[in-house]
Length: 186
Image (cartoon, rainbow, N blue to C red; front, top):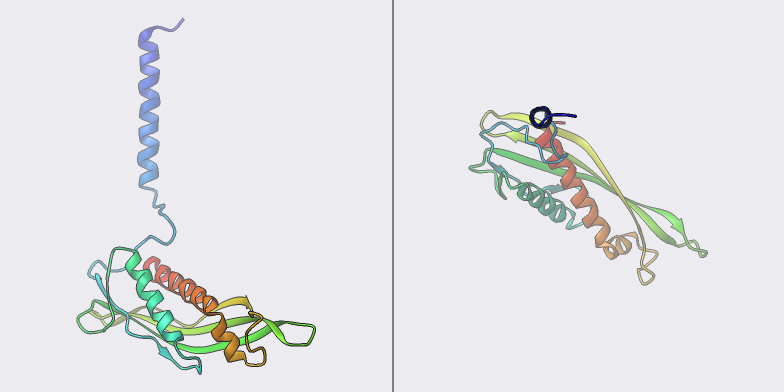
């Protein structure tokens, strides 16, 4: 039979092991994906001016810019401004290409499903040091969607306008990827 002292020592040893493992796990460097911050400490205000749109599709730049601003703001660590004056860092971008390609046809050979692809050039610059901290000249994002039956089937721009949800999903996915890449220095 074990004595009270032996049981007490085993409990203390067990608690000590749990505390040591916890302390080791806290200092191991693990963090939730998408929530890190590898930026210099002086960057607190980020300017995100409207993205440029070098495509024939209007309003895409507005959706992309708004999504990027919202994503930075949602991280809670930064103030986001729509201008480049008086900020610590600036994120600029140009939507260089939008492709709209039919991927499925109806029995009458009308497009019933499209893939929309965005290509965006992005640069994140430290305004204090004038260094480019992160850039990607060819970020590519795709989204596939069905054309609503009432859409003007023969007009790809009408089909594109019909499903603003696909464009919104691409904008949000793009914003999440860009901000995570910048903050985690990938």
